[in-house]
Amino acid sequence: MDRLSLNTATTKALTLAEALRAAQDAGLRHVGLWRDRVEEVGLEAAVALVRASGLQVSTLCRGGFLTAADPAGRAHALEDNRTAIRQAAALGTTELVLVVGGLPPGDTDLAAARTRVADRLADLVPFAREHGVRLALEPLHPMYVADRAVLSTLGQALDLAAPYPSAAVGVCVDTFHVFWDPQLAEQVARAGREQRIAAYQVCDFNLPIAADALLSRGMMGDGVVDFAAVSRLVAAAGYDGPVEVEIFNAEIWAAPAVQVLATMQERFAALVLPALERPGSAAA
Amino acid sequence: MDRLSLNTATTKALTLAEALRAAQDAGLRHVGLWRDRVEEVGLEAAVALVRASGLQVSTLCRGGFLTAADPAGRAHALEDNRTAIRQAAALGTTELVLVVGGLPPGDTDLAAARTRVADRLADLVPFAREHGVRLALEPLHPMYVADRAVLSTLGQALDLAAPYPSAAVGVCVDTFHVFWDPQLAEQVARAGREQRIAAYQVCDFNLPIAADALLSRGMMGDGVVDFAAVSRLVAAAGYDGPVEVEIFNAEIWAAPAVQVLATMQERFAALVLPALERPGSAAA
Image (cartoon, rainbow over all chains, first blue to last red; front, side, top):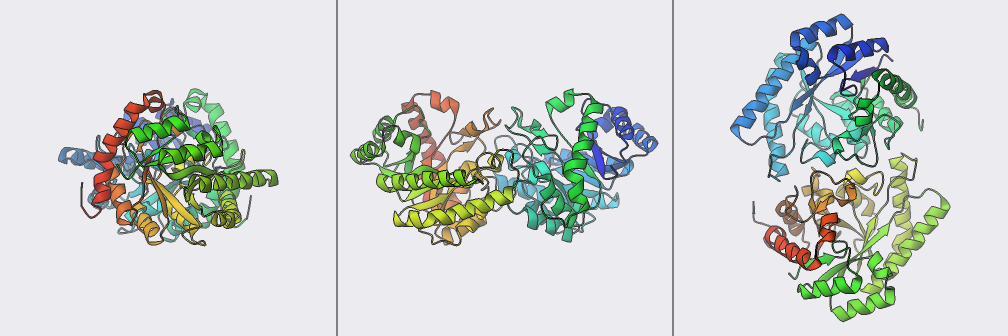
């Protein structure tokens, strides 16, 4: 379980202290933190709690939402991301996940929104570098292109990262968002070659799609993702860092955390870990 | 309205005879036919109705579902597609749209399913060519990759088509399915260069995603698709054929057909047609 990281989105009902305790009790070494859990106790207290837990923070989730077209929206986004960068540095993680944002209300111009993301990234990189934090661009499933992230594929994320050193801008590979991509093998390999893999997040793609489409993420094994296939690619690309389990799912949020973590560990051991440890093996 | 084609999926409550009449009454010159409406009257009667209407059939929808791994499933798929090819030829259209199918139940191996699609395409091409019918591969939005179509992008469709002459295998460009694609401009241009654009279908992508995700298609202007942007690409790629409006949407199905067709014509004229007629123009 050295590789497994509990992302606090999976245990949404828990406070930061409770989530850290649950991860410790389960014998984990890493946690991925959402900013809501950090901010509700305040950054200083959060840093103290993390330090006392002995857990390593694999990522901070999330900055981004960079697509505003108006000056006030742009300024707000930059300020919020600078805050997130400071938080990441204070919490001891080098990886800040960015969900880049969707289309402004009433706007359908994807190309322009994508250009604005590139522009805001350029604005943020120097500040992030000063703080030793890498901006981890997360492509989201194309079903969220309009309302959540105009960044839809790993190839597109790597193109966006290309002007910057790999220590400044990386990518977050999330099975839910990328498993469908016909270019997945070549783009994960490219991400490895370019040393951009900042985070690997796993969860399943449940069908039917949930009424709230954001909540269609499922426990590994409950949906249609081939975890062995994706994990072999990620391992073959040289990624040997923590693997976060990040699930937004109403049923999982309603279940007792102890049970959720037990299932998570069991499924991780059965479906993900073997492919990470033996990337060269053929069909698992 | 010479370019506009009513796809019978948009008027699901109408019989074939009623849909043809509605299209005639609206002054259209083309219809796209679904096989359910054809088969409920029988092929011979359908051919007679179409001939009497004077309308041209822009496409027949749909063949495909080629991903079965078992011999019986394969044989069934081939037989069904041969039937669809014969129907298309009899109805006077050269374009048979193929939705390639998702993963078999319990199976998560996308790569293997994609290989089977390529294999079945190879099986079907000679039969289609004998009948003068082109197989129009339709990439579907990645939200349907597991349950409807393992073919998710235009680039992937063009790769699949590449071994065959352009008169044998083409692609269907549907705004709902492809608008999000960061490679859209280059792949539509490629489709044009390779003379593969067999059909152009328009409808909007509505948010939030409908409870039944298949029904999230909307009337142009009701969702997040930039019709001018996509239509300019399609026109610049040299496509000058009919443009089908194909909408699966519970509210539209419940509305009076006359009203649906009137709105469809109005929105087509406002949002789609200008970009088709002046592909060189910048922002419409």
